[in-house]
Image 1: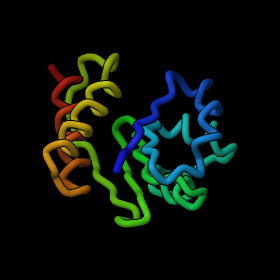
Image 2: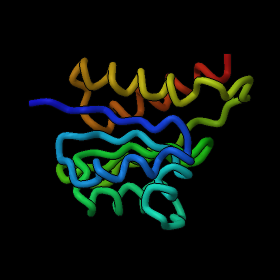
Image 3: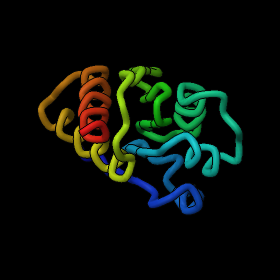
Length: 130
């Protein structure tokens, strides 16, 4: 079993991920702007975006949206969402990288999907508030 993690470098480059939309063994990590660019659709929130991307055949998708809820979806889990804690933000550069690293770490440690999402949200919130 393998799982390829795919992350765009910016919303403008997200459309380049279109060839991966029907790949079951791929996980896409996006922010809401990237998901909207990739799909050509304006979504009301991350849960709707995640649900739509799964309907295209992506194995797993994780979508962040700053202070608003983060959502993950797969065929096995359906849509899971976590609301980030209220914090005093000191920096935003690197927030996505911190989130991705924490999520992958949680998966390696065999956390369940909801715990992976919670762990990643917690660690990225800590990073941007330090």
